[in-house]
Length: 454
Image (cartoon, rainbow, N blue to C red; front, side, top):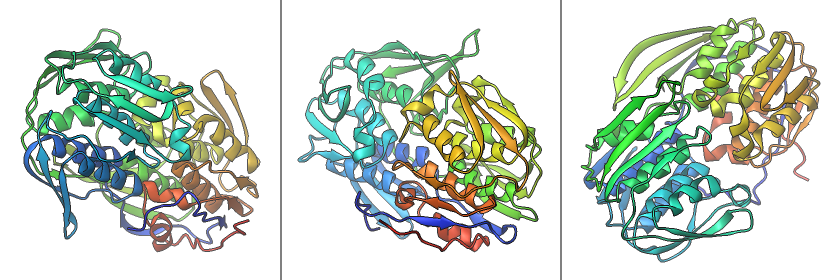
């Protein structure tokens, strides 16, 4: 795969689709699980085969980083093969670890590096270098590691790892699967019990994969609906093959596009149905979306199924804040769906969106306003005055801010809006969804018009 350059700009003019979307597709492998599969396989003893790995730019950066830390990683046809080194056995990298646009990769890797007795330096692209790391470095510094960052806790970051990591007892101030996972990964090489309490249950791929690799993890539910995760270190991981399901966050874009376009009828095969990742499906059903699950099954320890989606008239929705962790990456495209719904929708508890690839809360507001939608923010809530099916004017120019999900959300909006939508850059879609445009065209989207790159 050709690596993404920050100077590679791919603008796109998106015009209303002349007809609905039709066909059967597979979306790329789950990004969250792909990152973890590579990291856990590198920390395991033995040979792991990974099937369905997402070959997007973000995940490839994680593969490069684990190679630099001593794991042997290769491709065998469509499979990826990892020869792991074991917990505590990674080696000091010879060069800076460049994580590209991947916040997940950078934050989780920080946990691993903090508990290994060597020095390392991590950087990323302009977007990642603008995002604060303090919510990860602050708890990890308590295990004995030292972090040196730029002003405001931003990358590049030097990490002085510790050879005597202390187990952490930490309550997350804000629900975050990335922070939780970083602490658990640090705990693998700590002497004693690591305890992480989260106020709201977040995606549990790390806990599931730890068990898959043979590490006992205990989870307790608190009286207020949160969870406490316990891990005893030092831990030993045994190599186990991994099957990566289709990414529900990537599936969100063809799902919403199909709902918004009349006469659409699509099937998305093999997507992950982890209950801590299906908040969008619940919400779209609340809005009247025609979504049916078929062929439900378990693969690699994760629930999987096929999703049948038909064009639907949507109504407004009030999304509770406690649903946010199960759909945090899907809010921009959900906001697009709400723009075409009847009535005013309220999306609650979106503080986490401010520290994603961009300030996604502000960027989503700008995306909708550029195409004639009235939207406002009250605290951490977003209110959207839906205009009804086919009634969003469109015609705006969208600044995607190097954010792959903003770019795909803008494309979905343009497919259903009255006037063409000018998307300033689609290049960063490759970080999570290679050939997104080709797949949408396979369904009949007819995406092809480009804008002037200047």
